Amino acid sequence: MPEFPKPQTVRSQRVIDQIRQAAETCEIPECSRRPDEVHHIRSKGSGGPDIRCNLIALCPEHHRDAQEYKISPLDLFRITAAREGLPLAVVYQAVGLVPPDGVEEEPPPLPVSEMNPDENSWETDVSVFIQLQQNEDESSWKKAEHAALMLQKYGRGAASKLASEVGMSASYIRGLAAMARAFPEDQRDPALSLSHHRIAAVTETPPAWLDKAADREWSVRELQRGIRERRDRVDEEEQYRSQVERLNRRLASSTRNGRPAGTSRPC
Image 1: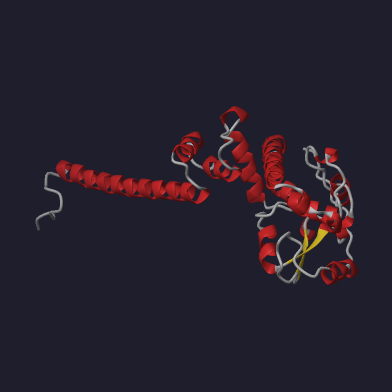
Image 2: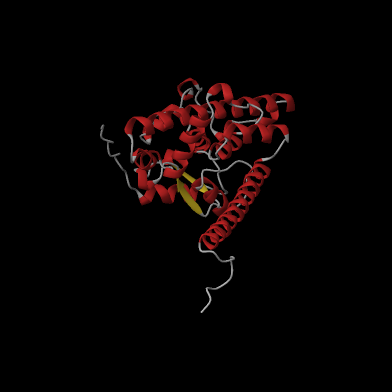
């Protein structure tokens, strides 16, 4: 089995302090809260270095979102790349990660101070947003497919080792792999989000749940509730069947012993 190389690490409290002191507000766009915390985009536990492009000043709420991957590392790297005026591919290489597909083709970002969103019309901005979302979804599916391939190729322990290398949780890696296995490319619904697919993937009948979510226009939360309610009903039905089976066994035993069920043997 191939060995997983140990990443090189760089530690510098001075750089962390610089990032914290330079930020007047949280670095997530449109957030005006205080940047009380500095987040390692590639986690320290996975070898993430204390260099500027791997560090971002966040408010506590967005720091929690980043740690739970509600904000993707790709989006965070885009922010630090713009701040440092570096191509995104260079940022990935600097922190010791392989850039996602398509990153090499992205133009160097403008520093935030030079961006002027007022120049775009509403229609242009909507088109840009849709294109970015499509690119992110495509990248996430490729990432899921590659995770499934790696887990199959390297076997037991691969999810934990990969998680430590890329700064994600092992359960998140396994969830991506399960999503790719459950939904080949021809079975995905572009009208539903990746979260819909990821949640449906861990059920006993993923395609059926995805179809139900599409037919009923369920949100992610409604899909979760539907699955939970179904599991509760199944548990109740199994409990009822178990009680019936126990009663039938008692009746059969009583019949073999020649006395009615529920009566005691005479003294």
